Length: 560
Image 1 (tube, rainbow, N blue to C red):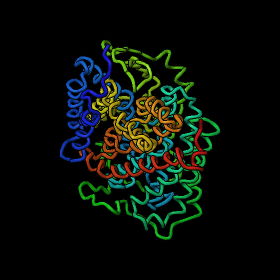
Image 2: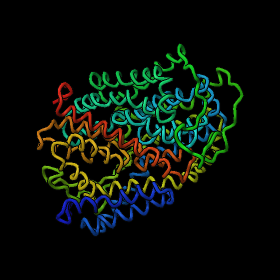
Image 3: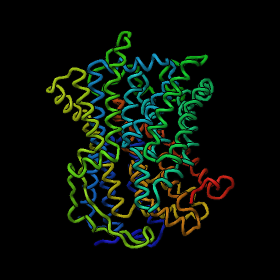
Image 4: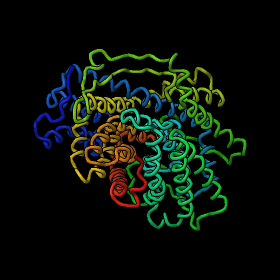
């Protein structure tokens, strides 16, 4: 068994710089726009292996097996979800049903700002709650590009909108993961997060429209933004504090969509904003006014659709919503996992790496079991929904099979990228490189509530998952906060709340966004667009946590 080494140079600063090499290299290559995302991911993975082996003393065999373990977890469930969501999307485009769907959204309102609130924020929150793991960005990005938004607008704005709901995504998976490593009641953790994120559920819709239309454009529709934010934030607080953390996003998003649609029936902005282009950005390198199709041929421009045609166009997405919601429930997983699960402990890696103090109170072996729960994967539910919807749309079995393999070919580079990204995240976890970065944040003393929140942000940026970030740093948050005399429940929740703002810059989400909008090779443009928004919003969350830690009456919100 190999014990992790968190300060290989005997100097915290040098060790932190060494630990940051793979991440910084990855972000710089992607942001430069000169290196393709899949190449950047592979190069960064090689750098992570070199850093783990030569600087952090991890045996080469362990490092290789950890990276391959990450490749498997990148493909299942993450890549599996993206593949099948895009497969469904391409089917609806091929039949012309997607054009009818986008027309139905346009019939609700022709104002692009209101379309963003409805699709990117409210509808995206539903898919985050039901499926998570990239599903909302894939779906909303595809819908927005179909509505005529530019690739950068569709990608970047979907990423910004997919923040406030993330802590309760995939039916509360991040909260459950946090509870598993801290030992705290998930209901208490969910309630504490529910006393932080509703503030940002109010802010994010305003932020979203400000980014798209500028400050003046935002002010013109402030009543609708307020309705959207309040009708999401209040249910988010009430459900998380008085019901449970599993259905927060689904309940809040459905209420928000209903309130927003109802409000749009009685209120219209004085000036209708019909341009889909970003007001404050030059996007000449890829502006698209026609719907993208991910290689399936441009979506046809539909004539005015009848009521029955509009209902029919929503059927595939209704099927998807219902099945994904069922797939995310605990009772369904409990039903199918005992039968349809293949668990494979990774030879030479499982329980061969030991976490030590100060990351954990007692030395702990790191398990490495690839649980191939193929039936309960969200992506499997999406595939079943796509097959059912395909038959409803009149596709033959042969065409469904060929269309699925065509989708694999279209997504080949994206799938490689996602696999490499998860390989980096898994390797840094097993090598202790991520813990070294975490310890740098933990050494900030009285400012720890702020920097501990940013630690959650860093965790999601590294792993692409709030669940993974909570599992990664939840124990460290608990130990450090107890040593500093802070509420461990506050800081555990802060890890999850701060993490949601890292979701928009993690490489996995950016690749999903570029794939969904058919803007391959422009991942650097998307990263540059969202990067500062991610940092500023994360700092605002950190500021709120500082107030909850030290300043009355905010301290009264903290659960113990």
